[in-house]
Length: 316
Image (cartoon, rainbow, N blue to C red; front, top):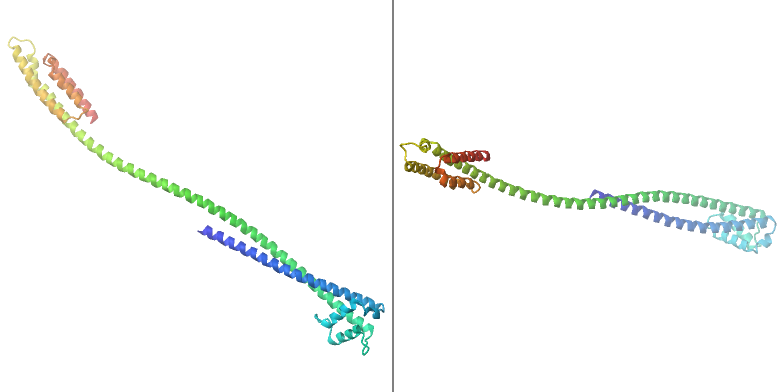
């Protein structure tokens, strides 16, 4: 806003300076025209006075009165527009120029009057010329100053106009940047909201998974406990050949122990997630196989359970 105000001020000042130059030029032309007319008239009158003085000084007053120069001097005396003569001298000059017989002043007196008129007109012309020269000087100085002012104001207008254009471009770019920033902010806010939702989901999943891991560990611990209790030990001992044990008794005891372990694994299978059920399925398959009742079968199952427990602990 300030830059636009400065631009308008510079434009107004430049217009004022140009207007002042135009007015000064018009006035100067008018004054020069008036001076030219005045100088032309003065030159003519002064020349006429010179001729009149020359004729009278040569004693040619009679012939002089019949010339155009004498008529011009007579007209000057009659109009006396510049107050060149006092009334008595004017009347004496008119009487001489009209050739009146009633009163004929001496040519020496008339010569003195004409010299006075010549000096007065020459002085007036000199003053008018000096005034014209002073007016020309003042006009030239004024025009030089105004031209410099106009040039400075023109540079100011151009620089302000350029600045306004650059500011306009910067404003457009800033608006575009602001739009881009606003769009990026909205995208970030949307991402943050989605991230918060995802984090909440992951937290819930983690809590559920931790709970499931805990239940799986409990189930495996129960399975290992079943396999490691005294009954299992007695069962393992019973697998060794003895005179008092029968094959049917050993098989029955093994089947009972396997059933208890399978029950614990199935409970863990229900609580486990999809990614952990494969391991439990493998343990169940191992216990349900025919070799599980053979010597060393339970040892392998117990080892598998221990490995699975370690895996669950690492994941937890």
